[in-house]
Image (cartoon, rainbow, N blue to C red; front, side):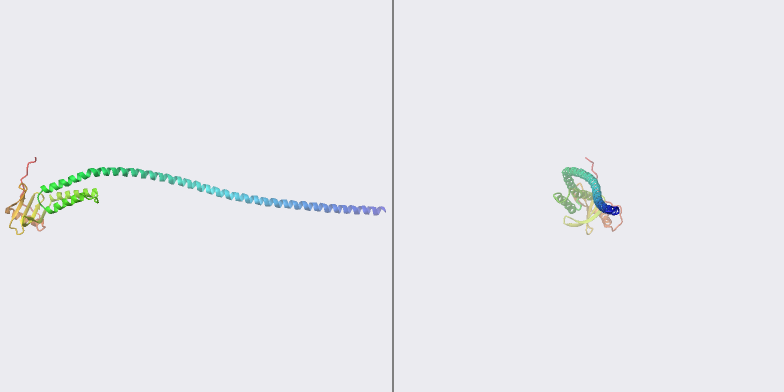
Length: 257
């Protein structure tokens, strides 16, 4: 073989070797790049997953914080409500104690005032019996009604006391008024004239007989000498004449014992 052909053969072999080396190097480089790309993609996916987890944990943390704050606010609200409820219960307990005390006082007062009212009623009845005999039916009926009322359980103590005091007031008013009404003296129907509790007089309907109640004798006394005065008093009591001075029979005052 000539030297030229030998060199050409060597060059050819060298070219193929270089080409093979280049192919091998390219394949290796391509594999390296692919592996690097895959690793980068995997890293990015892992980063995305990690970020997603972080975001999820962040949302859960925010929710937990919000729930914690809501719980704190609810706890504070419950504490305020419990404190207010405790104060209300304390006030109610104090009110209950006050009411119980008042009930005891009322029961004690009731035990004391009932005998007192009975005594007032007995005194009023005795007073009416000893007083001038005017409006006998009306006054007796008032006393009887009060006695019946005292035995009734459906009438409060306050109402019973009010009615008795009212009866006293009516009796007091009799001492300040001029009044006339028709009544009976024996078999005679007469006009009765009451001048306060100073004098109690009568006159028959025809004006033929007049008289007055004698406090000392406890009886009616005929005395026509007061006929004109009684007639004038009857007109005043009936609003048929203007008020005027009247001459009426008055019992002499007694010395107090």
